Image 1 (cartoon, rainbow, N blue to C red):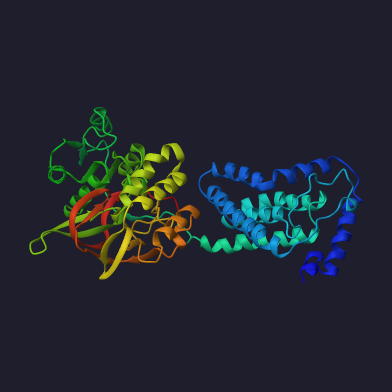
Image 2 (image 1 turned 180 degrees about the vertical axis):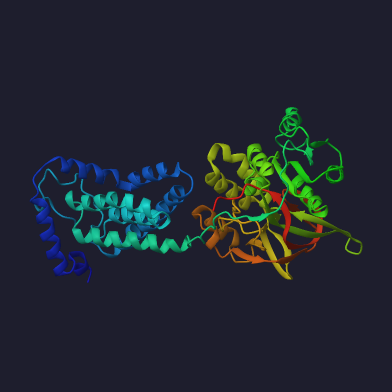
Length: 500
């Protein structure tokens, strides 16, 4: 049986010899040097790792395609060299089968069946193509060239190349399950709302948190220059932010409330604007400005354009009822949630990612931050809607975020009426190992430790020690329970409306 497998079925062997003879009859030329160099470049994956490095320099699909291609190549290479080359021993072509000037030197000593170069080439091209068909099409001629070069240089029989290519394509398609098709991201959409046009700031009261990340002494001067008739109230360090925003909202003649500060300050202003039926103008003055970015007012010019034209949108507002204090004497408070809330290590993950992002870029920074965070931190035990979980992350987004994995970035629709619920749990066996593997392979969204759902209301309760709950980036320690819900289209916000 072993000898039969080594020689190959007679028909395949005859076809192999026929095709090799056809190759050998080609005249000598520059193409011989080209295919010899191409074959050498692909040895041990050097060619593909180089291409992957170039692709990784471009964020988005090229970077994801590079990662998927490299992982598919790794799977194909392992299966080919560890399993199939041992199971299917076969002699390689001999010098008499091809002209000596074309023959690879030195010839590999491993089994000819199947071609590892072909498996790696096809795996990388198909794997990258799963993520980006355009990139896959561009890589296909290179992969075909590498596969053919193994016959042209006498390193393999044609059937070796066919089997290797099939194994490479199979590896890429199997790993495709690790990258489930992402749901299509909807086009940014806003529901128009009525709001007054404001020129020169007349009727606009602006609360400015001087502790906001981008505040400078010139901030007030800039706002007075842009809105010369506005009432501007600066909130100094140590002052009650909610009380100061309330004072701005109730200033005589106010028809719209503006806010300069981070997401926590903007959340407080949003609740005040709803209470007084005022449209809200969000000025990008904080460290992160997630809500301003989602609105489309990530610059002063965008905000000014929206408020002078009276362009506004209705958006949902998250409502959080928090219980703190002693179990027998709970203290209840209510919070507005513009963006997100989280329990567990998510704040640590975000802080690490943002610290590394300037040097590494967002995807690589996210990978390093995730490995560090999940590698050293312990899960939290709590109940979610009465079900007990051990988890690393409970993430709640006010509205659907994209992409649908553990690192949501964008929110194209602001009034979809749902809570985006994402849990990364430690309930499963070998949960930490599974999670770290998913982080390395970029398959967190498909991992069994990740649970993605939606809800309109959800309750989280601490077990034992109180929780630290972060709402719009503001930590709330000592939380025993929190109930989250959605108030549909509760808030009117100035926003440049997307072009239809």
